Amino acid sequence: MPTNRYNGKPAPLETISAGTTLYRIYPSTATYAANSFNPTPRALGDPRQGRFEPVDAALGGYLYAAPSLAGAVAEGILRNVAIPRSGLVRRAWLVDKRLAVLELLQDVPVASVHGRHAARLNLDSGLLCCDWKGYSRTRRVGTRILLKSPDAQGIRYRCRNNDDETSLMFVDRGAVVKIAVRNQWHILADAKGRKLVLDTLDHHFGLRYTGNIP
Image 1 (tube, rainbow, N blue to C red):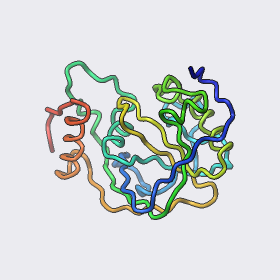
Image 2 (cartoon, rainbow, N blue to C red):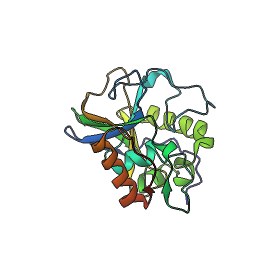
Image 3 (tube, helix red, strand yellow):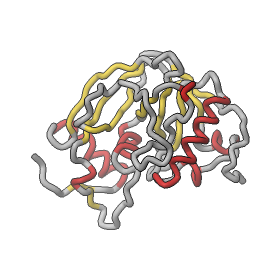
Image 4 (cartoon, rainbow, N blue to C red):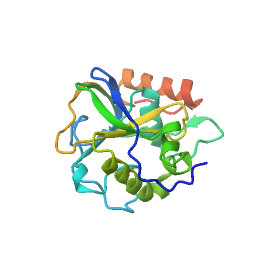
């Protein structure tokens, strides 16, 4: 049984194929494009840090996306949320957020750290799917995995709050992954984006939104 002390082995690799549709939920107030890589990871311990942001400059910038809309909702809306027993979506979860639909333009090998692949590294969901309080540790472990897996240009991991979905963090390692933006919507203000997200919250998570719509 995994003890959650990374064993230092290279991660199994899987390829995310060119043409794959990706989804990203990010702030509608952002001044950067939906396909841009963040060149400056936050400091360890920053309450806004992500789960696997690199802590070694050799990995370069990073970008989070998901290969399914449910994965994007799990990570972009519900990641640090305590799911209420009422089953109701709070308006604050959706305010000032945008849904982007992206397309991967090249094959990208990534390190697999979900399911049985994580177990091969002596890791399990107790570490990899923690809440924000454990992100400094997951960032360190994720960076070690990527440094031990030199052919990986990202990491694939299981989403928190949904065991059936995975998400991705790409790193550039000096050669930015080519990703195109195909569409994007403000989640509350744009009818199509709103329907996509609210239907996903309902069908995949059993959560319904009953609040006001602009």
